[in-house]
Every structure is written in structure tokens, then in C-alpha cells.
Amino acid sequence: MALSIASSSSSSSSSISVAFSSLASSSSRTEPEVVAQLKVTKYQSSDRFNNFVSRKRAAAVKPLNAEPRRNDSFVPSAATTFAPDVVEKSVEVEDFEKLAKNLENASPLEIMDKALEKYGNDIAIAFSGAEDVALIEYAHLTGRPFRVFSLDTGRLNPETYKFFDTVEKHYNIRIEYMFPDSVEVQALVRTKGLFSFYEDGHQECCRVRKVRPLRRALKGLRAWITGQRKDQSPGTRSEVPVVQVDPVFEGLEGGSGSLVKWNPVANVAGNDIWNFLRTMDVPVNSLHAQGYVSIGCEPCTRAVLPGQHEREGRWWWEDAKAKECGLHKGNIKEETLNGNGNETVNVNNIVSDIFNSNDIVSLTRPGMENLVKMEDRKDPWIVVLYAPWCQFCQAMEGSYVELGEKLAGSGVKVGKFRADGDEKVFAQQQLQMGSFPTILFFPKHSSRPVKYPSEKRDVDSLMAFVNALR
Ligand code: SF4
Image (cartoon, rainbow, N blue to C red; front, side, top):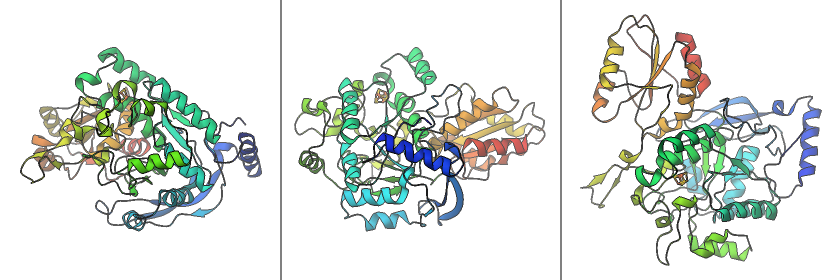
């Protein structure tokens, strides 16, 4: 069995290969079938959900990027996973707000150790190629095996690619690179050119090159580790907890609340990160020596002057409070502009539309009214009522777009209706909308739409709903 190693702090690739092979053969199973019986928890944030749900399941040890199902998606080698110990283990039901409070004064090393201990092979470090290399050093110091992934947007600086290589060699690891969907990049660049972000904002390009690949990566995990710090962005990161239920993305289990986000350096100041990197003689990106602090894609990152805030080096042509690429969009919320509550700006308004696909029909108010009135439709419809700034809508974007692709030409129409702003009352009164997203199925021979009852919004669950009613 070919095995490309994700990460390990100490093992050589050959020893891991042998371990995985023997594991597969001892259980008489092929690699994808090696299954660990895990007690897993569906994590739910306390303000959105009242109870934590725990259930037993058999969880396949999947490669990080095992999720993509589209034919034109990059299908990775089945063996990008480092599988340390596939054993029976229990994960306790956890109150993550309480855990965050308990760990508020813990060191990054302690937080990292806790995260790796809890999630084993189901957690990975998100590495951007900047000073978040500190996370890899902390993971290395725990002595535990760990995984690292990175988003190769295709627009990184040459220095960053060289740095990735240096890091792989320094820690004897393989970084699990995630790439954007080539068809989506092609469509974006052919229609809008290579630098559309300077004209209509970075959200669209980031969604294609970063957010969707990230979503794919996270679908193979139960938790991830980020280098977010409170002092990084005055507008969006001032309240980052050391651990939280991910407010935006879905994990292996699917559905809202199925992923946990660890931020071990949330409380560490940038200066202290640098002291740590120097003390431990950790390799750093050579761009830092040229004045870069925060590092992202080449066209969207620039050096900052002494005293300038590091985020001023990212998307400098945009509003300071909009400087999230979508990877940590849960940080963005309504904020008062002047602090006294009189003048507010809803940063959500700047988020561009979602569910953009040729397979999804964008319905207007008259279109929705017609759909509701019709008693004998030519085709059944499934329609999502959404708001593009809603984090739960964003989290299901991939599933819904995939649903559109699967149902294309099947006789079932897939639509979307933006139901915030002026349309909200109509949606609440006429379309059973309680919260975003609301998904409705309009059967062929009934005027009454059927509301999707579940919070599981993965494509398989949505397909099951459609197939049951079509
Ligand atoms: Fe595109 Fe810039 Fe975002 Fe990179 S940072 S994905 S180049 S908009």
C-alpha cells in the first residue's frame, strides 16, 4: 500500500508505512475500511443549542481530504493520513465554553497537548506559512503525532513555497496541501481576470481559492487548530477563545456544531510568538525579514511599516473590519462604528452572494409567490431561504451546490431565495421561515411546501429528503 505521510513529530515515513500496513492486515481490512469505534460528540454552542448530543458511531479514519465527490475535484491518494493508534477511545461530552474558560490561562503548549490528546488523527493544524509555524513547534514539543494542512491558493509568494519545503524537512513531516477546484478557478479568471479582487473585493476569490478547499479539508476532521490571536485584527479577532465550537464550518459528522476549533495562541501577543520562535530556533518565512508580518497570497499581502498594524498589510484597499478571508468568518459580527451604539455598520452587508451555480436558480419575490400559488407544478422544487452573511448558510454552501449538480437534469429544480432584509417578513409569514437557512421542498402535486426538518445539511441528507418527496 502506498502511503504518503501527513505528519509525525518523530516517526519516519517507512516506520509509519509498516505500522499502517500491519494495522490493515491484522484486521483483515483494506485501509479505508480500518475503522475505530469512537464515542463521538456533536458539539453545539450553548447560545444556539441547549443540549449537547452524544452518540456512538463507527467513524472511518479518513484522509483529510476524503470528502470531495465531484468528478472534476482533485481526488487525493487514499493514504494521506497518518494513523497513529486505531484503538477504542472515548471523547467525553464537553462544554466548550467552560473548557475555554478553564484553559484561558493555560500555556499554548498545554492547550496544544490537550487538543492533540483529545482528537488524535481527527485534528490537524492549519498552517499559512507565516509565524503560525509556532503551532507546529508546539505540536512537535508535545511529542504526540500531529497533522498539518495548508491551502495552496496558487497565488502564494515563492518565499512561502520555499518555506513550506523547509518546514517539511525541519520537522520531517509532509504537509497536506489543499488545492482549489480547477474548474472554479478557471471560471473566475476567465470571466473576471486575474485581479478581480482589487475591483470587487476579495471575498469571491478567497471563496474559490481558500474557503472551499478549507471546507473540504475540515469535512475529514473533528477539530482543527489555528494560529488566530486576539491582537491580530482589532475589528474581528478581539474575542477569539482558546477553544470553541466552530461557528461556520462542518466537520466529519456533518451539520452545524460538528467541528471544534482550537486557538492555542489566542492570548499570546505577536512579540511573544516571535520571542518563542527565536528561542526555539524555529525556521521562519524569509518574507518576514522584508517587513511582512501577516502573510497570505502575493497580490493581497504587503509589507508594513514599523508601528503599522499587521492586518494593514492584508487587503489594504478594503475596510478594516472586513479583513477576514472567510476562513474565520465567524469572527465577523455587527459592530458599532463609534462605540456609543448610535451609529452601526453591518459588516455582513459587504459579504457577496452565495450558492452561485449554474445548477441553482436564483428566485425573485414574484418567482417565490408563483411557486407558492401553483397547485400543479411541472417539476418539483427544492429551495433554500438564506442570507449570504449567515454563517450557517455559508457552512452549507458546498453541500447545496453539490446537490444542485447532482439534481441537474433529474427533473427536480434547485433554487435559492434571499430572504433577509425586505423579504424577511414575507418569508416568515408565507414560507414557514424561522431562521436561516430554511429549506423547502415544493412537491409536484401539492401547493404546500414541506420544510426540511433537520440540521444535518450534508448532501446525502439533503438527497434523502428530496428522494423521499419527489
Ligand atoms: Fe484571492 Fe487574494 Fe484571497 Fe488569495 S488572498 S484567495 S489572491 S483574494
